[in-house]
Amino acid sequence: MTLSLSGRFARLLTGNAYSAQSVPSLDRRQVSIDALSGLTVALALVPEAVAFSFVAGVPPQVGLYAAFMVGLITALIGSRPGMISGATGALAVVMVALVAQHGIEYLFASVVLMGLLQLIAGFLRWGKFIRLVPHPVMLGFVNGLAIVIGLAQLEQFKVTDANGLQTWMSGTTLAITLGLILATMAVIWATPKLTKVIPAPLAAIAVITGVVIGFDMQVPRVGDLAALAGGLPDFAIPSVPMTLETLTIIFPYALVLAAIGLIESLLTLNLVGDMTKQRGGASQECLAQGTANVVTGFFGGMGGCAMIGQSMINVKSGGRTRIAGIVAALCLLSFILFASPAIEQIPIAALVGVMFMVVIGTFAWNSFRTLVKVPLADALVIITVTGVTVVADLAVAVVVGVIMSALVYAWNAAKRIHASTRPSVREEGALVYDIQGPLFFASASSFRELFDVENDPDVVIIDFAGSRVVDQSALQAIEDIAAKYHKANKRVMLRHLSRDCHNLLTRAGQLIVDSDDDPDYQLAVDYDVKLGAFGGGH
Image 1 (cartoon, rainbow, N blue to C red):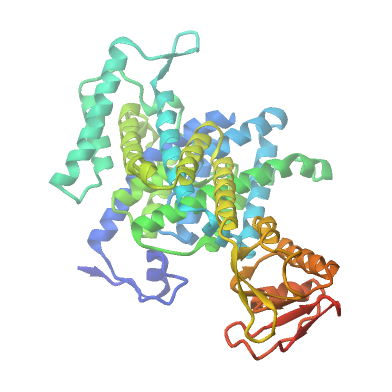
Image 2 (tube, rainbow, N blue to C red; image 1 turned 135 degrees about the horizontal axis):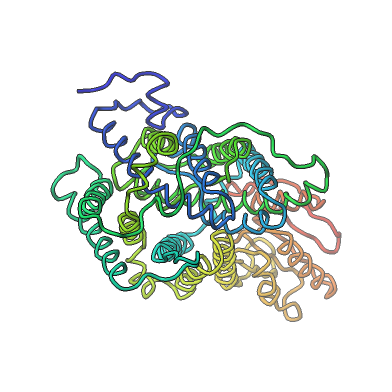
């Protein structure tokens, strides 16, 4: 049976509110899958939000409110249905220093400013620059984040003793916990073989929780982390002085938080898009994340961004529309308001088992085969980004990976420039240099070495039909060669410069004369060094 959801509301739920695509119908099965997937995600969000609150040095409710508000707003207006946002560890590790030095109110102010910076990025459409992230960087990001998610679960193997100190589990408690984790993973693996109606992680959480409660097993539960009960968040302007000094304190943190949040969100956007066959929407996601963080800062939340682990749980559980994210956020709020006693009974081991299955599903295992097949430079990028993601943070890892990839590309492109010579058929006695390959900063030195100024004839033609002049370094290299021929009392002419070079030379203040003798490039320029000017028509 099909639910009659028409018009803008249906487009909103299915993620097509801003496209001209036909509106897909929502049948009851999909709605049910999305709702159950959202419930699963909400259960997994609880310990993560609480744990990240502790990392940031703030009360647990601050992380839970952030998970609810960021998750709800991005689910409503984000560009990728199926993607889950909330409080994250990548942001928490940056926040801890601010909270420790200046207090929680400065954190709320930083979150508001963080959101404003993300809104600016969205309005300026800077999200499109995520396209510059190469595939090896994406592989390293996925693998590094999978490792980070896995390592984060190790904290759940600690217990608090009578003196309030945390120690590692041992003995019977450790054995039971490991057994429950393995049992959770086994249920997740087996459930899809029996039924696809109930998301496998939700089934596993329900089964393991029932076993633990039924046999009264003494293992850590969600309630041992912190009390979840609370009320609705209250609107409040952060209690900080509205001065330039305050801005100088919070701006560096807000800038770093905004950058990390957008990078993690946009990479998750691409990853979820690959799984759900969706494209685009980077700038809209920037706007959604910015709006969510501005609101969260005014309601006492620690801010957030897209969560790769919970997004993978949702997508692999069948969540495909905005319903899943909305249900996850509302369920999380209901846990805080009404159902905290029940949620606090869920064993931590069940949630750890769910996250371990996310790690297994997220890690790009085929990258091990890829490492021996791709060029060595790409393999080094994958390994480096993975390592930096684990030991530092995602933003640094992506920047490092992009820089490495850019340098590798520049080095390889620089080696491609070469020239062949031939006598001119139009100018008697002239020698033509046919340039092949891109001319830019990395190849400028090699370009200068192509010419034999001393032994060349009095007239030299440099033909750029097989080349592209890219930047100012290339223009300077051309001028240097022209100057050398001028010093040798020889004439040099430039031909078949591309429209890109035409624009560069125009901006550089050089005289450009278009010519009709080149239908492909629509520009043939000769440089007569004796006259000291560019001229066309040769």
